[in-house]
Image 1 (cartoon, helix red, strand yellow):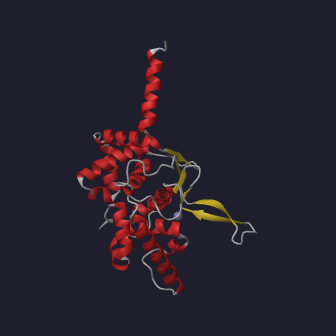
Image 2 (cartoon, rainbow, N blue to C red):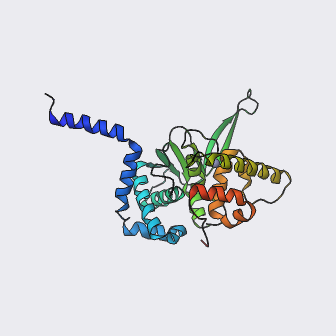
Length: 275
Ligand SMILES: [Zn+2]
């Protein structure tokens, strides 16, 4: 006869397999909902992140649960002698979790590790524009999201700059984590996983039209609310308009009402006001 401990382990394993990891995360988040953040963490968030001060108590509690889950799940690594502090981890986790506040308990399933550099870092980019000749180019980046290896890279210098400027339309954390949302369904194509099947048609038609409009505005040297970097490709367009939505929401609503509505429906959040 098998010892009771082994039988119990096998039974628990079967239950866990049937119940599934996403359910476990839901359950864990609900548990953490009852546990507030330490007071000095709350002080850091209130001091560094203006949107935290504007949240309703219920939203703040939800964010606290998500931050704790995020910090338990994801690994942080300091690169080039960068020293990771509670504040660094917290500021990154809080913005990542705020972006995905209404997107379920596992919004970044492909992300395992966040690498933090002190400043913008150099990367070697290999491309082949014509499909024959391979070109190598050194570029400076403030952030990078990989669809393989489960890694996301951030430069603390750029994050610190963004912390002082909440309405300039630039936020490297929102940008890189928007890429993670995009690749959450397994395909990085500028379309994240949407709540309902019916939502895809409106998303695709709106984004295609807005992307073409940005290309056309840039071609004619017209001013744009959306940063020109969004014209790089549809994936960058989604990441850039995410930054615009949160940081220049009123302008986006005035000039790109459809796009604003689609993003508001997706994130279920309001843009930052008077930060
Ligand atoms: Zn990008």
